[in-house]
Amino acid sequence: MKKITILGLVMLLCFGFTGIAAADGSMDITGAVKDAMHTLGATKNSSSLCVLTDAGYVKVDGETTQGCIATLRKRTGCSIGDGNLLTIHRSINKALWFAIFDNETKDCVYAVYKNGAFTATKVNIDGENATTSDGWNAMKAAIGPDAFSIVVIANAWGYGAPNDLLKCADLHNHLCPGLSSGYLIAEYINEEYPLEKDESYTWIGCPNWCKDDAIQILLDLTPGKKSMVVKQRSGELFVKEKPLAGILIIWNSSANSGRGVAFQYDWEKMCDISDVEISDFTPPGDKTNPIFWTTRIKSSFKMLPYLDQPNMFVSLASDEFNVTSEQLDRVKEAGVDPYAELGLVDP
Image (cartoon, rainbow, N blue to C red; front, side):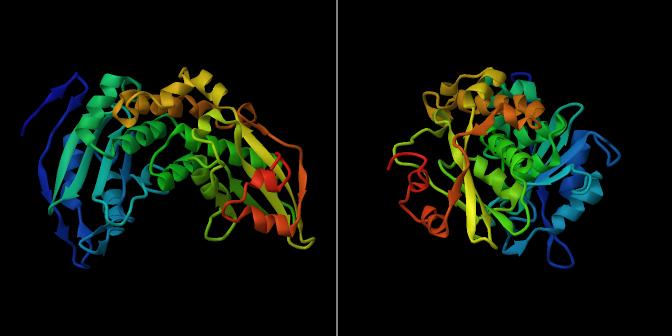
């Protein structure tokens, strides 16, 4: 066993666990989970544990992996019902992994299955350290491509993030300030525009950014059900510099008519609260620059105390307006600027 210390933050413990097929043909990860718990020095009675995994989404050798979730529950004591076993959406062809996080020590064991065996890494992912370039670089070097998902979601859970935000992070497979903006917009809609009899929402995510994944989860609006449309406007290259966030249409099926309103999101206020600059989201070198990541990590954490205050960040960009059935159809079409179609800007 080899121990390496990186900047005093990371200890790597890499070793192999063989994946074994269970009697029903599913993946048996019992040995990997037991060894990870031992490495972490935790027991299933530990109240400070949180498990993250892409099990249930990915496949191993063509087989689904939902059985791994039961093993994680049994061996760690964490469960979906208790809100401390979090599934993270991934493509079916991605590698199977799980991470066990101890919120008291901030230590985490990340185990990923490749080439017929698990390789585990123990690393401290303290949220405060993650907002520094050195801290983030060490965590990313230890965990790899899944670092951002694990570091931000695990620490957000530790900071008491609401479960419905974590459900949004499941679909989006990470937590970021863009996702938080969608959470706040959905909260604003629920508070200010509750549905009445025979009414339904259509959300026009224009310009589109991470917010639309949160709105999809919280309001059950999806492209497949034609209740969500996402598109960019011509010339909008960096949506965080633009105040517009989207258009809500409330359709009354009995009256065959609707009403709508446009929203804007205050990125400047978010930056002030997070103590970051808007330019930090697109630093020189983009994703190769640690500032790209630390800015998103810091903003994600700083926004957590404000998730119940949507009016601080979300406001109306228009008065309420009427919507015809023809307009509802038109705003969903490719190449149509919904703001121009609905008379909110000059064509």
